[in-house]
Amino acid sequence: MTDSETTKVEEESEQARRGWRALPRNVWVLGVTSFLTDVSSEMLINLLPLFLANVLGAGTVVIGLIEGLAESVASLLKVISGWLSDKLGRRKWLTVAGYSVSTIVKPILYLASSWSVVLGVRVADRVGKGLRTAPRDALIADSIGESQRGLSFGLHRAMDTAGAFCGLLIAAGVIWAMQAGGGVLERSTFQKVVLLSIVPAVLAVVVLALGAREIPRRGVVTQVPSLTLGGFDTRFRGFLVILVLFTLGNSSDAFLILRAQERGLSVLAVMGALLALNLVYTLVSGPAGMLSDRVGRRRVIAGGWLLYGLVYLGFALAGAGWQVWILYALYGVYYGVTEGVARALVADIVKPEQRGTAYGLYNAVVGVTALPASFLAGLLWRGLGPWQGFGPAAPFFFGAGLALLAAALLAGWLPRLEREPHGN
Image 1 (cartoon, helix red, strand yellow):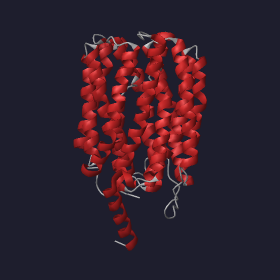
Image 2: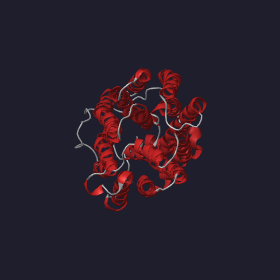
Image 3: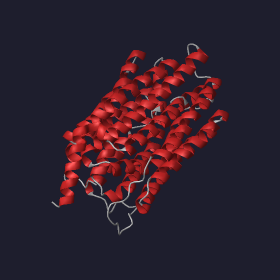
Image 4: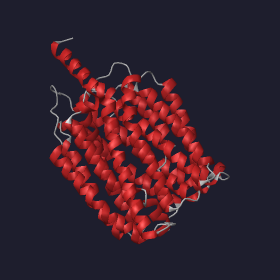
């Protein structure tokens, strides 16, 4: 080991001992940006399926199509933006551009009078997410050593979800003030929430543009990253294959909201359940990331997917509203255990100069698979073929089965992912 490598190891060990206090500026700035963005986004995103169903009269197939198509259309952009950030060696301004696009299109929802307008806004918003996600995650990974990678991504997810909690709390307050009992969502209530959501979205862009710093690339990269999977480690490719299987059963969370309303929860009660989810998510993310730094990412993710399968079984079998509340809290544990850890795993098993492309491919796999997953969930809800007797429980049985299979494959079939990581 050279002197520089020894010094780097010693620095990372010291950072690990200091914990979150040693995390660099970029981790905190990107965390605050995500906090503010989710305050804005979560005020709206969880009301959209109710707005579509209660106000615009859209059916579950249309809702599933909107959610799936919005994610899938942006997926190619995630790959391209990640690849471009690798090629240029620059992450920050692609990230700023992505957050800006999502902010600009939000006010259009105030005027939405048909589901096609909502579709257009959702696609544009996901284009913004497609621009920013891979460069942002790569910027976090570039800013921190391997020994604190799980903690960094866990903290980022915690701040992101704390913003979601605050956004939901604000939206619930608006519903309570404007609709009393909040039985079904009304147009005027939704429009008020749209207006309020613009302020934190603008602040997020300002914080990111002024606060984040570009991380200079270490060494000289002589080869432009490829947009194919051929140049990636077999561990990364294997992980993506299993991720496709899991995501096919991971339909849009819009169906969880519709299921909660179908089980008797009012709009205000649905918001309360979502608050519980995001509170648990926030509390679990950081400790789960630290745990993955110690015991390995694969074990933590497999455990989270196993929990997801059990929670979806619960949604399929739930017969009362109070059961939905418990399931939402457990669903928050799943999110906290897996979201940040999966991103840390990607950084572990790809080369530093491939990170932008790798995060683009990772997010694209999830986004592309979201279209058939959500569309299929909408069909299953209505009763497709052999699923006719299950009713609205059908997509949850289906999702549970695929999640349990994916967890088993990740834990037992895929070769151990925590072999020597590429590091920084």
